[in-house]
Amino acid sequence: MVSKALFSWVAFPVYVWQGISVRLRIERLHPAEVPHEGRFDGKGDEISILVAGDSSVAGVGMTRLDDTLAFNIARTLNQRSGRPVRWRAAGANSATSGDLRDHVIPHVEDRDFTHVVLAIGTNDMKNFHVIRRFKREFGTLLYAVRARFPDARIVWSPVADMTRIPALPPALGRILQIRAGLINAMGARLCNERGAVMADPVPIHGPQGFARDGFHAGPAGYRSWAEHLAQYLVPERPSPAPLKLQGADQDDREQTRQGQLPEIAASS
Image (cartoon, rainbow, N blue to C red; front, side):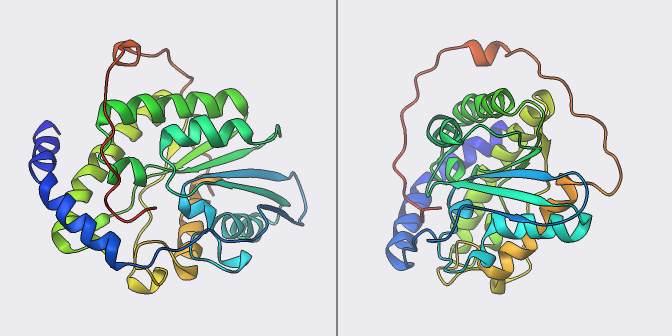
């Protein structure tokens, strides 16, 4: 892991050069102007789900409600279980784990959510946040969500395969995939320690799953993503109970000074 991190930093000039080119070339899309909550009718105990995250939850590039991630997750759970599903989306364009912890989750109204999806990590990765910073910010995000919604099943959707993103040149995709692997490995450890479930990265089946910018998901991509996450939210077979929260380790207690690198690649 250390060698991969060092290699990614050696390749940082390539990231800057190609990242600027990508940002200048691709279209800048805007969040969807659609409702942020709704409900599907059904029978049995209600599923109440919060989907929180970055531009993927904000519906960047989408114009219709039924093309957005949170809506598709709720509809998929409703169709699979037959149960009523109440959903709430809380997304912020370009959000990192720290942004979600500090500016999004605190402003979600108090509800007894049974499930929480965290679609976060892509901006931590593309902004080259060091792993120690991601550990601190994502780890405390998990604590914050657990404290706000103590009975919820928390599912993290990690960073997708950057080499499959159409808008990214091959070299940039490979560099970002190294960072994604580091982010996902640390996220897996934190989820295991802090009572959350890590999903596999969403499968990417081709460019048809993307919006017109080639970076954000499109309608087909969000439907596929929702179906992928549904198996982790309401498993067909009971899964082991998540581990109880553990105390912060030594790294969490250390105070570190870290500067932020400029956001170069396309915003997510």
